[in-house]
Length: 166
Length: 424
Image 1 (cartoon, rainbow over the protein chains, first blue to last red):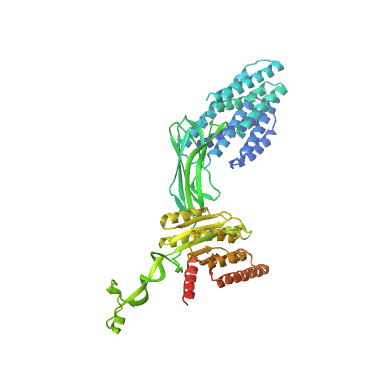
Image 2: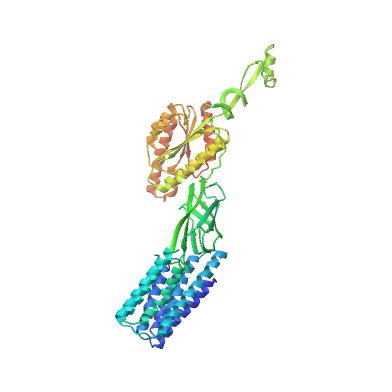
């Protein structure tokens, strides 16, 4: 079994666990058949054309996490679930792009590099989200909109700057 | 922006929008992992690709369906490419037998990677100019696409049909030593006649029996001179029916026959010209040897079926293409409106031999045997027999070739029959 498959299986279990535990702790048992349905839908992602299926499941998962936050379930579990779901979605796509490739040196180095970048991105995202949860700041709606717009503008400018300076 | 990036932007946008609408700051944190993932992708996106590629095909030419190996060495002359994918263009008639025509890997600066695959292909000339390369960040979010020059070409020749040299005897020969009996006295192996001895004649060739009967006179045996001849091959590349599968299958047989006959004639030292007659017309003036054979095979590899233009256009071709009295081997399924042209070719002094792949027999094998089909096949067969008989009456030698049978046996048998008829 390739390294990315092992990581994918681990993340799949963690993803389902985060959402399931979060909802069950809140007393919403109906999440179990929903999770089961998602696993059933996930099975055909072994096929090559499964990108859109995996993406739809990710969108559904994020929607459930948002509903969970609205229902005052554990935000830590919801955000962790989203992070691991993102990692699963990435690894499904990655696995498909690597499919049938002979595991020669450059391919293995690509796999290692990909996993390293993914783990870095996932844990940095989680860390920032948890830091955000522990800092309790209150803004008015207008200020929030302003900060979001500024953040989006900075991101767009940053992207352009990086792309131009390469 | 590819589909993966679109999904991410949708999720980030959706989370932020729901946070704003519901005025819930915690929802913003759901977007955080996606945002960081996107930023990591942007930071690691490649600036540009600086790759060189070299394509090595193990053979310059192969026969159809014969495997050949393609090796493409890609060298990274720029900075490290974390996520590099390259794929080679495969033509629709190509099949990969071993290996893959694409790969995805991480290529450090100054290193080379190799793409290796064994494939087979149908008849044709296949040429590549580039290889397709994509470089992106490790997550495949921001992709750069480039065509890296990697030229290469392979000629896939028609499938050869094994035939022995057909015993054809053209009326006219070229005055150079060859394998064809020239109907002239000279130095050969077949007995031709006897004449009175002339000074300089070899004593080995004296006919002692006749000399003994005529005292004070000497007689010399004469042998039939063996020379090379001019052969012209005309390949009919016109679509006669609307049944594409039938036309293509028969055309492949016709091309193989043309290739094998050309090879046979040229190996015996003869001069061969080629004309591929269809919507586009290819001509190859008479020539000898391996160079001519290569040119013929290259043109036959490129030959494609085209629209049905009248065969009468053949009359406008320059005389140099098929010198007068040369042997023309026409490979055509033949149709009724061509008869006049065959008659004219005969009148111009050409020895015309028609090898006609039989479309009726081929179709009959494909059709389910119902009563109506059987009647239709019978009618078509009668029509074809009448057509071929009319050609025979015009002095055109006809070989009715049922492509499921060996051409060699039919050709040897028919050539012997033709010679016998001529000698009568």
